[in-house]
Image (cartoon, rainbow, N blue to C red; front, side, top):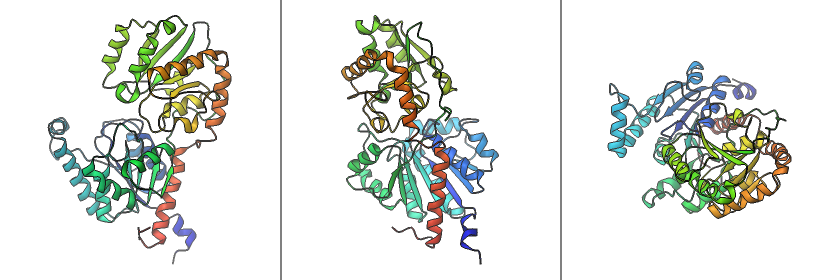
Amino acid sequence: MASESESRVRPKRFAFISSNFTWGGSEELWSLTAAALAREGHRVTAYKNRLKPHEGNVDELRGMGVRLIELARFPFLPNALFSAIFWISPPLSVAWQALRLHLSLRLRKRPDLVIISQGGNHDAFLLAGICRRLGHPFVLISQKATDLYWPRDNWLKEVRAIYAEAIHAFFVSEHNHRLTEEQIGCRIERASVTRNPFMVPWTKRRDWPGEENGLRLACVGRLYPKEKGQDMLLRVLASAKWRGRPLSVTFFGSGEQQEALQAMAAYHGLSSVRFGGYAENVAAIWDDHHGLVLPTRAEGLPLVLVEAMMSGRVAIVTDVAGNREVLEDERTGFIADAPSEQAIDDALERAWARRAEWRAIGDTAADRIRTLVPADPARTLAAELVAIAERIGRSGGEIGH
């Protein structure tokens, strides 16, 4: 009979399910965690809506033996045609994906643990419901919770059920945890905060960009003003006060409203604004930018904020989601009281008044964020998942609480 120490290292079966339609920042945590588990010898399967060649770390996962299953596919049907079906009838597409997941989970050997990654806080309730009905133990990862998106009343019973029956719920900020409880009207007791992987070095950088051509801020994120608020920032920058100051802003990212935002900047005649496109090398942004400005309306905990602080740059952000949990106003950055033009202008004004201290503020922020975020968040989460799977195994597969 195997000893307890031997059983601890026995490979586990993990299944990851992502509810996102695209590969964005919220895919990094589950995919890098899956890679960490595979590297340790565990058996990993991953289910995703769509998979494009070479996106994210897909190639690495395949090379490590991770089985990748695309849910938004129909045998012998070209992907382009299936995509057309999705846009014509989203419910039909979602139903097909749910059926594929159900059949795959039933026909394959039972996983020790299923990890369901949500772009929001309830968008995977149908997929999680399949695990619940099959009796598969599962945990939830919620990347965002916002007042902009609430579960519909006819979904509420099922959303409550998945949180009630999840072994654990991981949120990227305490704010997201609390808001989710409010939105579903009940406590989520088995929950904790997890951190997303960052794309800048852990080693503290000491450089500071030259200021001879003025100060430069980067606004990094998907070009989607409904959530990211770039429209508000452009209106603030269009005021006579900011036009007359040696301050410029580069918008990094791509998205649904890229052309519209560029047209808005041109409409206002903003010569101090440029669009830098999608940045493959995030660390390089901070080679020639002194700070981050983030006028967002909805977030979980912005990875770009963590990365800017890691890089020793000053941050000016709105008071949404977990921003205030990692940033201290007037000490490690500047927080706008609300996602509004007046509040953003006020935060920028306070930051501008202390521009001679930006380097020192960024240095303090760099020290602070390293006390709040682990050096390798994916490995940290992988260790927690292994511990959960082992606990389930010791209980004989029981998933009651």
